Length: 288
Image (cartoon, rainbow, N blue to C red; front, side):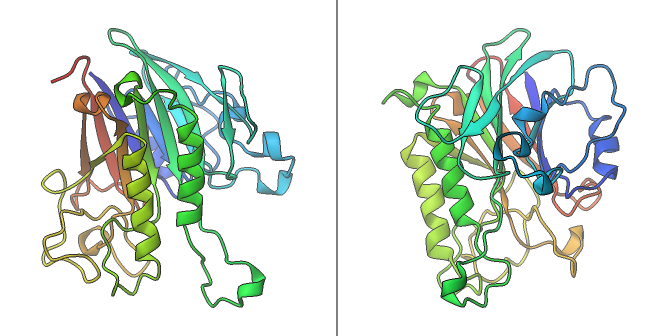
């Protein structure tokens, strides 16, 4: 079995210390910030070109921003990182064409005793509306970044048969699954399209969903009363105990998804030192 941890670490230092002590093989990080200067021998960050969009955008002021990363944590796997390049029609075998700055990082994970798979760390950055809209949405919207991510993922789908691929994509999409139209969250309809498009590409939604994580009881407003969503994020006015929204999700290509299990480590005592909890992703060596 290969264990993957997915975690938005909010550019904090403490999560790195915890990350290096857990029994996992690969980490899919978001908002990674600047990694520690010294790391154990088994831990590899890969080349900066796999996560730092400064390399291909030529915009130094964006360096060390809230990049997603793929990090090797153990010697039980080998990791072959994909270098980011601008969105073009064709790329080399070790490249990924990226259409949104700081939204995706990718690598081929090669377990010691199982076939390889490609892992993607996703971060749907907030985008401010165009000035011409005179919008009052101060933060902006995330679904635009999510769709850019999906477009980049689609380049790794080269067959009508989804079982021809072994893809694992996880991260912070900053959207709410199955939010109701009367939710105060302003773009529930647009958010629904993200999950529909993933399904259309043969990328199965893997959760986490209750009972694979603690859920809000009673459910928060804005989602159906029978929701299986589990909180993965808390605001500055909340704590792990009062967290309400799920913003972090996992997808796997159809067929390969039968080897994948997901759990939100969102218990109050297991949450960890970030405003997002960790997602534990186990990839079996063979179909269950």
